[in-house]
Image (tube, rainbow, N blue to C red):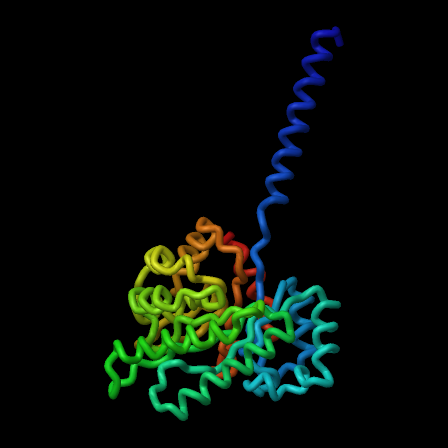
Length: 302
């Protein structure tokens, strides 16, 4: 090989190697989507079993919506004053994160006694989330009662969010309003979120909850609400005679490809949380099948 040929060969080889290294560096910069699952999908599992399945299936976090059907998390033995430190150690040792505590709080109630009970429930969840270093708690809007004017109900929801945001102020906890119940239209949610702007307030985008009723495209919903979305709930279903029939991811009608595309293009950095509604729908697939399936099935959307 003459000098010029050898020099050209080395230059070309270095260029190819450099390009390969550049491509590898780009791959490293592509963040793996953060995956979590809600314990709504495994209502009979112990906390240790929840952790075991999360680790075995490469999840990054878990959303706690009850443990062994106890939905008031402040009553779960795992979170008692005696056991909470050990629970946090188990989560950390498994390189997991508790990403959200799902309260049952509803903010639409006008009755003062009911309203106080609901807000007090959320405040107890904020306190627990703070102790667990959990960034979010979930609350519901949740209804638009016929006996109240819609604008009155929306005002109640806004005031509730601001009160809870103020309660969480100074902590690392953010109160997230889920698109849920009858409060699922983008324009209503936008009105609520605009009026509830607070450092400790955001929202959960439950894609199916909204689309199944409003048929608003994920692109439109994201355009309206993206600045408030901190967390997502991912599930799939077919609508049969107006009723949802939940299926494994990718087997249903939900426009998940469009939703995940707009989230990733928009720079969403939060969790894609699998919400398998086994507690409410015992007829659907067992968690031993559904929870391992989700991390595999969602890959195609990325």
